[in-house]
Length: 364
Image (spheres, rainbow, N blue to C red):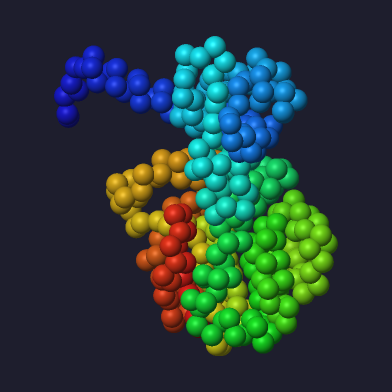
């Protein structure tokens, strides 16, 4: 039996500091959510001369005292800048980088999606004790319609900028097929951004989007009507199952396989749905093959494991017998092994640079 060492006062101070720095991050994340929800970042992004708490409150139609305290949090967290904190009326600015991440929805670095659904994500804490006891989690619709919008805002900025010019050309022969007219399935389509983008870019092709979130599908139908795209359709696979008649030229899964209760079964379905010369574009979270590698190689591992408990793994275990891959559960090695077990013979990692995702071309 290992003898427990005596408590080290200095180590105690550092441990306490580390713990409360996590709480600071959580509270500041809430302040980022408020800044986004109240439009404060967008206002600051347009103000070249900067804003005092009074001018920002006036522009936003908000109470100055609340805005002042929010700004104090933001400058203390080094999210906004201030050249003279000692001034009677300090002037605050957003840096160009802050504008990109916090206030430019079409920029690939835009990061407000996860903060948009932060209340819903953290609200899942209330359901976690029961999930830990029973082993059964909760699907994405448990986060309500704002959860679907948050997912949309998280992933679409990058997709809208790079899916067509960067990713599609890396897939052998796919650009020509899409141009000439192909049948495409976007499984786990969410609110339909990628499906609608492909549909509008390739009018000769037909895209079927599948998702089990009623909130995401409602949003997808609204966006389809706004976009006036006629070659895209959306389905709940529980009502309209994915056709397993080898009829699809391209099947896409964007950041969803690790969320599924039965990903092994889904991969077999994808194999049966693809033509014999078809392509599966598998996009999923970058992950390593062990806890040690994830912790030592990924500085965001603690965030991703936490999000897994509250969202991804919870979804993956939202039915009894769910496989529960979780956010970091689909490494390249595991994905290839599962794909080959499902009947695929070709698996290639694509040369696509993304901060979070890995991209694979999988073929029969």
